[in-house]
Image 1 (tube, helix red, strand yellow):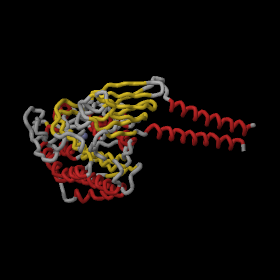
Image 2: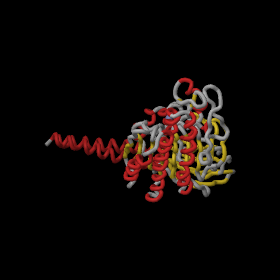
Image 3: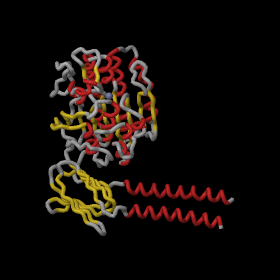
Image 4: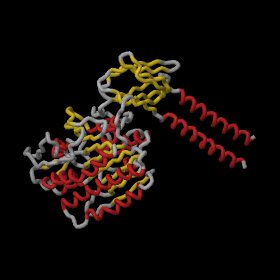
Length: 456
Ligand SMILES: [Zn+2]
């Protein structure tokens, strides 16, 4: 009797503590938002990564060269240069796993392990703000990344001749698993009776069409559910490695053609589209039979380092963006376009100014009454510990005042881009934390008293 009683009580404690923690974390995560102007923000986003697509091979401003220093072939494209186009952006490391990790974390030194750390990725932030994370990936996925997704359709190997497609579902919206399963079964139809470049291109088209079907399905069947859909198509990279220079640029032209339906879906359904690559590709010379990007001479070539970044969203500017950027800037930019705070734990990248307004994110260690002032006039006022003031005109001056029972902060801001302002009362521990600790102690002491009573 006695031992059974003791066994039961710690279980009860654990249960109560779990509930307390859960309540506490829910209370902390709610951000309240004020829209200050009529802004047109994307509901959802597609992060489209073309494995191994160097911008040198299709950006109008650039010319691709071989390792021998002579000009090589360039694709002619019509769809891949829509929206806001960043001309000079490079990966810090032209290898697939690490470059993808940079994209997901906004950290130029990222690797696959860091992707698995808490709050390291864009997916941790989207999830906290009510998005589901969906993915269709032929390359560039790895265990820690797959674990960040609510559901992912992915290739287990890199073979176009013997592809092995799998699905990992964690918390998928209803019907998505079935849809992905249908697409897994459709791949053989895409590839049959095709060979060489045609087969590589069909493999890419399958990935694009699957992603397009998924985005369309979400809009139709889960219209209120925001999502971040990550896509990787792998056959431009495989084509560069295995088929050579002349097929590589033609594969880009086929991609341009096959992208059009996805571009249309995004455009018509208020979905932001981010078109990019993990790294580029280099060739020894014109008509080289094999290419590379990660090793030896290839890794130093601009053709391996320069990546495209094109953004289409209802709240972004269009045209080319000058300046030098790093692949680590992509994640903070994606957060900004979605109007989510850049609280990426390891990011060293900075948001690129593509949005046509600015937002102020307030994160405080306790509840403050926060007011926003422009030219001595109060523009807005609200209270909370996590706030978003969205839709402010760019290049304007604002003053943010935060007042609590014992503390007042004042912050002057020039809105050349989004701003994240943190208010810290300086006590080290916030009030809610103390309340939670006291409640947990009460539960533990209560449990111990019950144990004592049973013993007595
Ligand atoms: Zn790659």
